[in-house]
Length: 469
Image 1: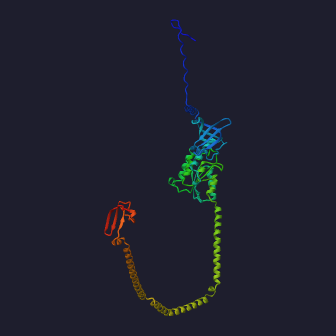
Image 2: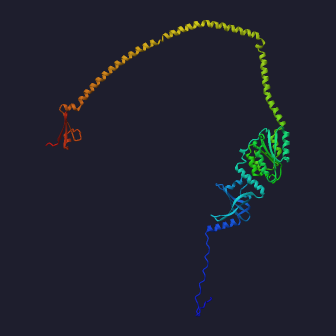
Image 3: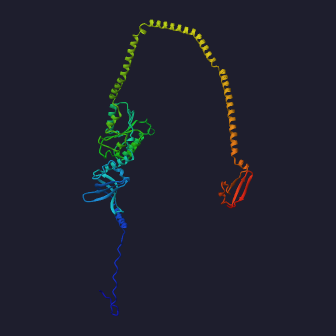
């Protein structure tokens, strides 16, 4: 230990050792947020490849899963707004995918995870992934819904074609179309079908051909968007969103015939009908002249058979008429009809002569019947019967009234005899207590102080005194 000496040669007291610095103590939340900031700022957006496991789809629409490889795993979450891109994709446990998203920390549990923005199958190139993503997004909007597909015209007269005028596709289309059916008018709208800016030209051409006022041309029955085959890069202009929306919004039905049979583009899904090749589009839109002729002959035969059968029936009916007596002996038939007419005229004349006599007899008979039912006689008889009933009723009412009066007089006499007032008038009285109750014995009055005695002409109050025995 080092000692300090003062001027007097004595040692001084040693200085105390410095206190250690207090450690910076963080809360769990603060530490978690610091870790999250380091991950988000230091790593941020990443592309990660691995196998999907423990996939859970929630009722909220969110999807939670783990992305793993042979040595490690990481939690991932795909929110509902991004799950539309999974439509049409085999997204399940065990599938190898590539995901793009942001590395972050789920603070409530302190777990680091990836917020997924984009999902694609492993091995799909950038263009194919872009194709699948756009296809899923437009399909989710309902752009490819079957209910929006319009039927193609059976016999189109005017066809608008959007394509390159120098390509093999237009030549194949025209050769097949005119070989099968001549007379269809075709208007070609020349556009570039490959290279930067071609998609805008294709979309503008579709819009113009759907608007007769803009082109000054008569309306088209159907539009064809076509080009020859090629790689995904060659056909890419037909995978642009602007082309898909122009096809879907066209007021005229659209046939997409892009590439070969194995090629599919976004334009195919948006169109009302997809033809595998330009030649197939021509076959679909044109009816074979020979086939039409055969069908017309078939229909003519179908229509001719019943007509001929009907004519044969009429011919047989006419022959049967010719064999009847009307055609074989018309004079005799006419004479018989004349004879019948004469007989009917005689019967009519006889009926006409006898009719007045018969009517006269009928009139007399009806007059006799009417006389027996004269209204005045009926009225007189009913009046007489009414008067008789009225007299009878009056007599019975008078007798009943006298009887009721006699009964009433008898009942009144009985009531007068039974009236207490009559007994009072003969010298009897009624004794009552203070409440008006009638006393029927002297014993009932012993406990009272005052009595009331009623005479026929009034009442008298009296005081109760007990009489000596």
